[in-house]
Length: 546
Ligand SMILES: NC(=O)c1ccc[n+]([C@@H]2O[C@H](COP(=O)([O-])OP(=O)(O)OC[C@H]3O[C@@H](n4cnc5c(N)ncnc54)[C@H](O)[C@@H]3O)[C@@H](O)[C@H]2O)c1
Ligand SMILES: [Zn+2]
Image (cartoon, rainbow, N blue to C red):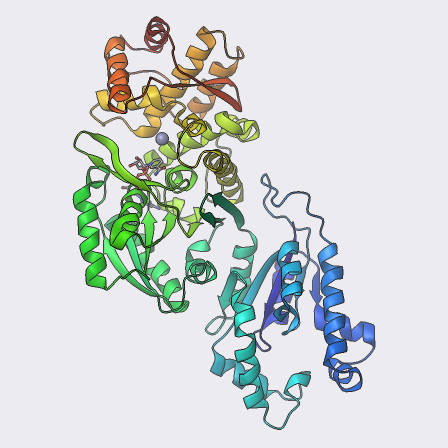
């Protein structure tokens, strides 16, 4: 859906790249300058000479209007299919989108990508071939004039979120990057103090630099890239090089791998690394990793020098659909999980599902449990898709996987936008977690979170059924969906009373009543305060507890 619009200074390759992108995607290609020339029946140079620049700009603005009208936006995103091949690929004239009205129009009509290039190289390119149709450079000193124009337009170009530095890239490589960007989903997330974007798309890892700049992080800013050795070995280099390409200054910070290191001691070690790296209040902390990294780095960002900017690049499925959204950060205390923390909203969340290719299968499964959870809470279509199983590929880093992640994210975003500080409705995200947490605790945390939540979701559905509050097929459907994805559906033979006691302990420590999230139907849950103990015990025993 929507156009792919390429803009940028003259000489950055908009037309050639645009043609290549259109060819690869099977879309129609429109070169705005060429359309204007055809319609006027004369070259742009003559339009300038005979009618003046103002007339040309008017023609350009009219053409922007016309092109923008050719996409009909019923919804900002077609979640099931991603942006498909309906819009055109448009190469604008070099100056077209300097005008803010044109820029806004095109940004609404699809995705706008600005091609830029090293200034010296541009000057060389555009002054080398003078016979080309560049009326603005038809002056005594074209080199100086190109430099002046470049400077004058810099700000307008910088206002475009997606940028590609084409300096060292071939046409094919630039086209590939444009296609990555065009395939991305963007979700704006609103909270009481502002708004940020979540970008989701395969290949976005290498776009982090320019996206940070577009999110308002100035050139020259220090970026503390926090990751653990596992993830750093796989992805840190690519991220840092993208940051450097965008004139940002990354430095690496390392935390040990594993939930047992989600502690205040790790946060303290991050403070030290931030100081060593020279991070000050104008700096940014970037989390590159799973939920543990995000929680620790986010808490450090919230508190270091009373708060610095924070960016999330989640690399596990669980962190993509759950932990990276909603602003909760924090660490575990010896007395329990997530007992110290802060709300810290990010400037940007960048999700590249292609990194899931390296995620161990058990970690993947934990994420799938949360995706299924989001389907049950608020997206029956997503649930139906998951019910059908993993399919031939069973991957999450193909186009379909990305669309599923998008759907699961949408559910979480809707919930946290409604209840940013977890005062009520956000509790629905705890579906399956009441029993799940108790099972994790009783297993001394040897049971995986996803497995525990899977069993917890079945328990919740069975309880809803026992209370006569659920459609009769709900528990069975949840069970089958979980089975399809190799998640457990039977409770380990813990004592049911002990599970109850563990839940009660949790409740007492958090100073609130035992809350249940019960599915009434797929896509509809409710929060219930008092479920009789005997109902819970009998459901747990039915599921395998002793
Ligand atoms: N803040 C929130 O709202 C929120 C929500 C849900 C969960 N959480 C927290 O998230 C944590 C769990 O997150 P998690 O499941 O992502 O665990 P994790 O961060 O420990 O990551 C799991 C494992 O996968 C490895 N890994 C990560 N990305 C990889 C990749 N692309 N390739 C290969 N290996 C990779 C990690 O090194 C780690 O060993 C818990 O601490 C939980 O409390 C927070
Ligand atoms: Zn969870």
